[in-house]
Each structure stands twice: as structure tokens, then as C-alpha cells.
Image (cartoon, rainbow, N blue to C red; front, side):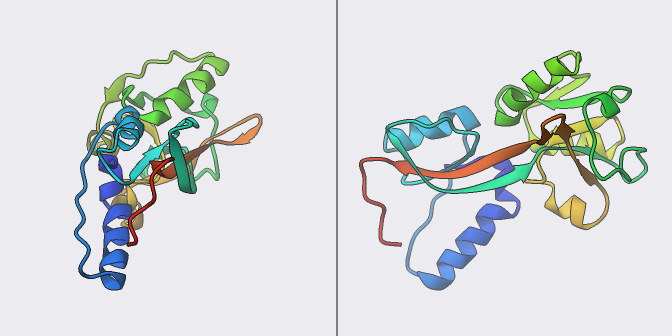
Length: 188
């Protein structure tokens, strides 16, 4: 079980690595919303789940974690594109492209937006990384997200990810790999 945005680079890379080490292992990947993944793993619907910002639970075991910077995603023509990092106040004059509530990043952004005195709703709200990316590519505003799912556009220079910060420093989003706490993992 995983998220749509992880299927652009992270999941295919992991599958390729596993296929080279264990070529006889079958792999099935289901796409779910962030909040559904922990329950699916805990209920035994999947051996593993890959999701952002999962709160600790006694029925889940976190196997690994990677931290990604939350940032402002803009076109290279944006005045924000040349900055080393930005605050939400720096982005105040640009339309916000926000993730809908099915994204863990939405829960991270809400208190930061409140601290900055900004509305917690954006001009555009999307439940898909693809839609957020396309809106940013068209120069319609600033999308707030991690680099995950944007790798191709970032590598090609079509989009720029400018790390977001607040007074206490950078803002990270944790991507965790989870399994049921009471079950042994398959050998592969």
C-alpha cells in the first residue's frame, strides 16, 4: 500500500532493486489515501505500507523513515524560484495551491498557515499530486509539497522546489515504511 506520488520514482526504484535481489518474488501495489494506509497494514490487507506523517500506533512497526523538506513549488520564472528558502509570508502575494485533506502535508501546513495569519484554504486545492503539479507548471500559483512525485519536472528544470521554513527552521515531512507490529515480515 502506498501513495500515488510515490509511484513516480521511489516505488519503481524499490521494486527494481528487489527484483534484482529476489527475482521470483511477486509484488502487488495498491494506491490508497494517506489516512487509509495505516489501517490497511494493521488489518493485514498488506504486508507493508509506505506513507507520510503516520502517528505512532501500537499495532504498527516503523521499519524505516526518510525525511523530505516541505517546500514552495514554482516555475523557474517565479520571483520565489531564486531564493534559498522561503516562509509562508514570502508566498503571501501568490495564489496558494494546497493539497486537499487526503494529504498528510495538509495537516502540517494548517498550523503554519495559522501562525503566519493566512487562511488555511488555498485559491486552488487538489487531491492529486498530478493536479498540483500541473497547476504549478501553468504558473497559477505556489504549490506546497515535498519533492516526491515532482522528480521528473525538477530534474528537467520545469519546476523549482524552494524549501519552506518558519522561525524554528526547516519543515520536514517524514515518509515511513510500516508493517504490522505483531507479524514477522516475509523473507524477501
